[in-house]
Amino acid sequence: MMTIIFYAAVFFLILWSAHKSMSKTKQALLKSWNSFKNMLPLFLAIVFIVGIILSFLTPETIALLLGGDSNWYSIVLAAIIGSCTIIPGFVTFPLAHTLLENGAGFFQITVFISTSVMVGVLTMPIEIQYFGKKAAYIRNMSAIFFSFLIACIMEALLK
Amino acid sequence: MKYILYRYKFVLLLILINACLYIISPESGIKSIHGTTQNLKEMMFIMPPIFILMGLLDVWIDKKTMTKFMGEHAGMRGVITALFIGSVAAGPGYMAFPFTEVLMKKNAAFTNILIFVGAWSATKIPISLFEASVMGWPFMILRYILDIPAIIIIAKITDILLSKHEKIQLYQARKKEI
Image (tube, rainbow over all chains, first blue to last red; front, side, top):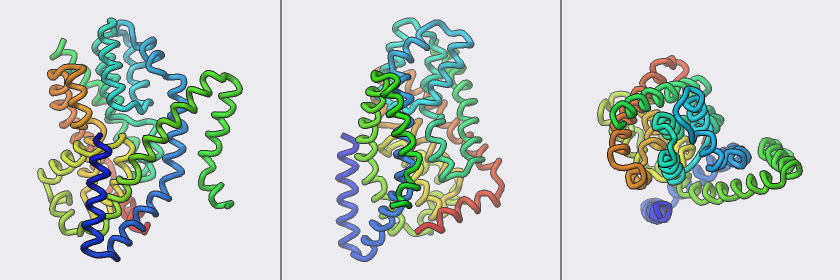
């Protein structure tokens, strides 16, 4: 739904742009095409890696790994799985909810949610392409740290 | 032809790995191919409007406007603009990066670019409405209250730890491309 609205919006922008200046519009579309062409191999590679990893790390496996009580072992596992998967939000949240209902510890589930929205280990190659190695490492490491901090605060306030 | 093969060497390697996976364990192999095609469809669907929007912004937004809203001296306005456009955008987390190209070209501050990337995946308003219905409003609101400062602090830390020289190099690399 969001994507369709997005398509419509971009379509009107193109019309508006063409109306204003044909040559600028052509230039814009050429630029779009060039950056698309530049980035496509990397994006395709990421999609394939994600496919391979997710064939092992299915929601059922995640449930199996994170379903128990909170101990240091499952918390670390939650952080690793959260950091390494690219799961869309509409899968992450119901999964987290189901796990909680089935008795998983609140702390590890919060760590899982926080890391999955803030840390992107698998997409690091893309990030490095744009921000360089140093910035990408610093950003992701501090995101891991903050995920734990946020989980601690949420555990204290919500439980 | 050779050039194309070279550019897509990793993709070809991964297809090969996937094929091996299928031979070793057909079940996992099929699952992987299935997941990949699904993600591929999603990616191919979301990529065109994002890249077109990027091209249009590149041509139509002048440096002055960008500097005013997201530049080094934009202050709070820069932070709020970055959070806002990151939060309303559509598309998976990794799609934020191609967008940063145009932000860099137009001299947006590095901190604001990092805030934008952080917001793109952590505080997505369309998905969060769904989050609230599953996890409850207190969970979602508290997460936002904590995530927004965290995104800003992470951006500041990354920005501070990078030297001016390193940032200039990153920006220049972007500007060199057409």
